Image 1: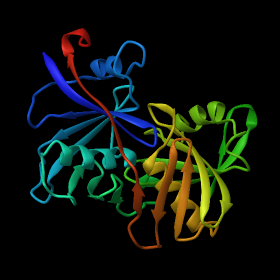
Image 2 (image 1 turned 30 degrees about the horizontal axis):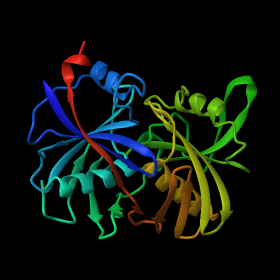
Image 3 (image 1 turned 90 degrees about the vertical axis):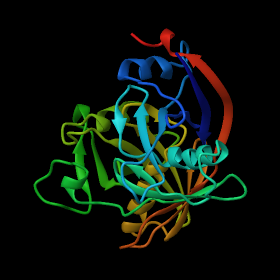
Image 4 (image 1 turned 120 degrees about the horizontal axis):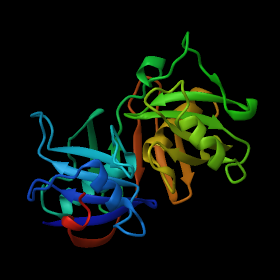
Length: 281
């Protein structure tokens, strides 16, 4: 069985995007893992699937699968690519669409320069909304890692869970060691995305993210939103801030009690057609 797809990226956070409205396929976890392999498959951080919506207020349904085959609730860089994909594939003529995700409705708006602005919804902070195991809600939490190392985190749900740590320097931060420990920490029963943020000034921060089920990526849209919200809540960042990731920059806007707005670029890499028989078990 042949499957058409588009390879895309948002700031180097790369995706295989598949239209399952005009074609049909079933992709299980093992098949997704094989497709995600960068040596023997297509290679990607996440698989993005376009489907018909289940709710009348949405234009499309958007499903996201990590490279390990696990389905997740939201992907900020992915939703920007999703918006460009459905427009360029002529699945819609709208430049502003409503997209159904596991985390709720998001509303990306396609600009003339290929950038996309997205209403990412309201951030959530209560431990049960992450989920995060703790006796009482606090502004910040101490988290113990291996060898009695302790870090301080903020927890934010931006449609998917994030733990944000402020570090002196993201370049020297030991993300390779700390990231997996935070991601799979026993206090995060559904695992978590681990963000490591360096404050440059009130308008500018740098960020590295160890993504749940993927590892460290060049960019993470929801991670940038979570980091910006955390910095604003702590009084470290202004309400409009530029978050710099390894793959490029995102513009994030947030005021307490309001939705988070994310603006950033998208890019097409190539179009492809594969025989799924080579990837299915």
